[in-house]
Length: 367
Length: 204
Image (tube, rainbow over all chains, first blue to last red; front, side, top):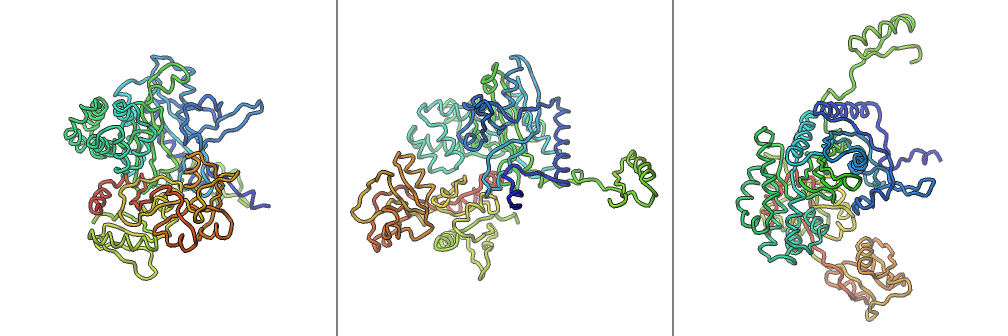
């Protein structure tokens, strides 16, 4: 019987001691960055009414979310995406011209198969700039994310910039395109399958060029070259706006000398329907999926209140903790207070040492 | 020298095809007896030899960033990868088969099918709106109609000689199966330059 008591469902793991210390310290560093950038914390509820979010959940989210019934028979949703829960909270309080900077760090609850330990997506920390129209808001979000990775000394991390609005502009030319199918083919990165699908809507030359467009990844310089070579296509499809926007973002990142940490990745088109403009994901060496994702979502809050343009990101903190090796995240050395007679003497000496910044364990009898 | 890309290859017949194809492109490798890891002669790849059905797991966890794998194995794994390059070798078809002359007839429960490809079969017939009852077998599925377990099977068909020997026939081809170079999506994003060069080398 006892072995059954030791079984833990995936996603309900506890973390202990050194690992938990590291988790808290990393969180502390990130929270300090948020604070210095003028962001204040927000706490979202652990559950809410399912019907509030039903229309906003992707098929994937619906499959992986936990639902439960309350005592009145209402269907509830456990928090599986903090951005959605946050939008709901802000929709209730934010007014049209408000600019609100919020950050959060909390658990999310998603189903994960018992025999799949790959996702580890159970803790999100993130920030949202609510009421931010236009490029400066986008730049603030991506530079804040960049600053966090710099401060965590997470080497070999690149932020991939893409655009959901580019996808929407392309699709505007072909109204019968199934957008979900198109996104799944872009994510598959199968040039043949993508071109074949696009050939149902465009001639093969255009289909092949659009395939190359959506599979493009490169540095800022390579992106500019790609844009020059494909200028005719961009004009023909009337998709210059999003491309120019990405170029201007790149120019600013170049000015502030952080462009090397970014890639222009037109295959980043966002799997979540609520994104409307720039989208981005961060990848780092030896981690099996994206460690952060974000983007602009100008219409999401209007599902719960007024239409307030916003941009934000979330980091899957548990995925990166083992990659962060700085000593500042290790528990400090402790002094063991022994050799004095009685608890009182040891206590008084320990307090002296603690006030000078030492960590002290009092060695008593039997402890 | 830069770090080699990691590639998982399946043991068995497909491995021989991959080895030959890569050799024609100047990428040569072999495994010492009982060894399951090797490097190619140019130092481009670190190669792991794994069981075919385990290959998606290794790539999903990023242990191997790349793999060579059939559509059928990827589909059954339920995992998502990048499909970077289809190969000309190893292609086959997944078919609905049954005893000669039986045709495609549902009983009250729908089609009763034995298969190793339960996910594919379930999704295929569900999307088509055909009710099915599926029994999972891990091999020798041709036995199911012979022994009376189910009238139908869904299986890979290459030459059809095994079907013929057991008095079975293809009733319907459900899908073509290709062998592809697959990648863990995150691994591709962090190594896309090197991977794109490899694709150029391997492209027919």
